[in-house]
Image (cartoon, rainbow, N blue to C red; front, side):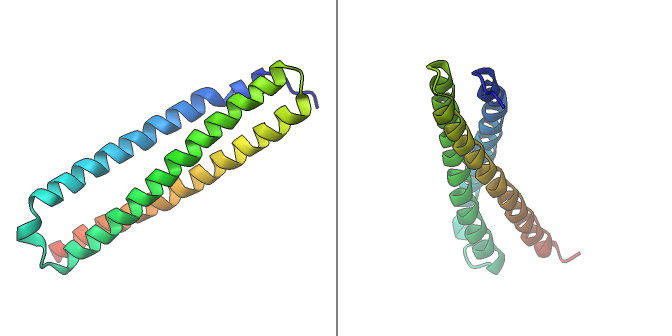
Length: 130
């Protein structure tokens, strides 16, 4: 199978949209953390509050890794295009494969982060005692 510059170029819009989604998640999480910080004194003795804090720390670490792997994927996608542009198909294939692997890792972490955020909602619901 012959590979040309347009093959990795297909990933550009996908990675860009993914990074935008990750940034939106981060911004929503930052807003939540800031609001929790503002009410820290009133809530610091609640057991659910400590669960929320642990949950938020996990999510922040995951989002950082998701963004890192997404950025690395984008970088290797560009390197792949450069290799293919300069007629080095073998290097282009390998760097594109690395780009895809990083993208897969980023997506897998995204699924884990979604599951953790659902756990956070469960913690909030447990306070309602419904």
